[in-house]
Image (cartoon, rainbow, N blue to C red):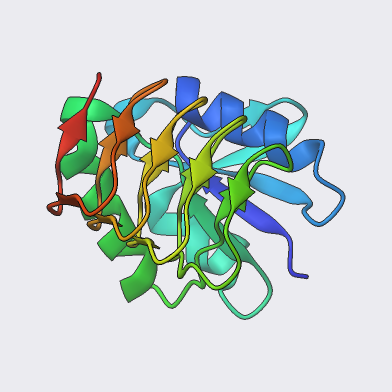
Length: 170
C-alpha cells in the first residue's frame, strides 16, 4: 500500500488522520491545503503542503490521497477537491471502520469514509466520495449517490435512493 496524503486540516481531516494512523493498512505521509485555508508547515509531526505543491512533494505514483474536506452543506467543496485530486492523478482510498458491517459484494466507491457501527445491507451501493457517520444503516437495495453525507444514526430503510450531493441528518 502506498502512503496516504490527506487533503484538508479541519475536523474531518483530524478524524481521518486518527483512523488511518490506527489502521494497520495505511500510513499517512502528510496533509495538503488550499493557501486560503492556512499556511504550509506541519501537523501531527507531518508536513502540510499547499495544493499547488502537492504533486511535486507527494507524487501520485508514490502516494494515494484521501479528501477529508467538509461534511454536510460543504459537500460541494469536497466534491470540487475530489475532482482536483483525480485530475492530479491520485488514486483515492476509502476508509471503512472495522466495526462497520458491510454485506459482501456491496460496491463502495473511492474516497468514502464509513465510520463505526454502520450497517450496509445486501444489494446496496455506495457511490464515490460519500461520508457515512457512525451508527448509520443503509437498508437493502438502497443507493447512496456520489458526494453525499449521512449524519450520525441516519437510517435508510430498504430500496431508497439518495441522489448525488444530498445531505441527510447534518
